[in-house]
Length: 120
Length: 120
Image (cartoon, rainbow over all chains, first blue to last red; front, side, top):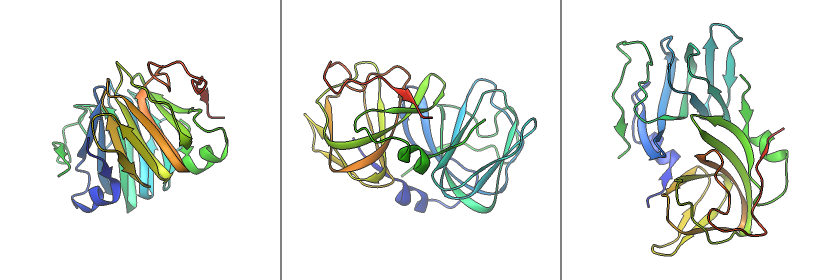
């Protein structure tokens, strides 16, 4: 049973918008990602997605509602089927909870679509 | 879509070992708890359980392995069926991720068995 130190884990990679797998439980994945600039508009038809900001600031843009701005130690759950676009103007380290196998760009295939690598 | 500020959420209650529901997604619950002193030995037969320390220090005692000591921003996943006892000698604020409906004392009914209230 190995613990994960979030600081060490975020120090272990640099690539933005390329989620790393930090753990799995009950068919769900804990992923870590570095947000930097604008991601792509997308949605997950079968997956609710939790965004927790570990450091920095993340803005989640929504089509039908006002943006949600998350600062350190704030989280929001984006329900399945809700189109959204994460943006981090100054960069952010974020933790995601979502079903294992969820594609980062959801219903969209994009140059930012990324395979998930496990944290070393 | 309402964000949750973990600092505000932990400030909203005092009772130790009485988890509050901070969000639900994909049949899973995000719970917040104040750990203080020794919890009870227990296991969850059908649920893996993630412990993330938000502040303070939590020791997870295990029957078959060395204790896992978690400091701020560290997490561990206790697999289903593994007996464990959380202990926080100096207190800790912890975030739990586990299936909705998981009982805090698992297979044990104890005076610390608690209903989960939603964060206000």
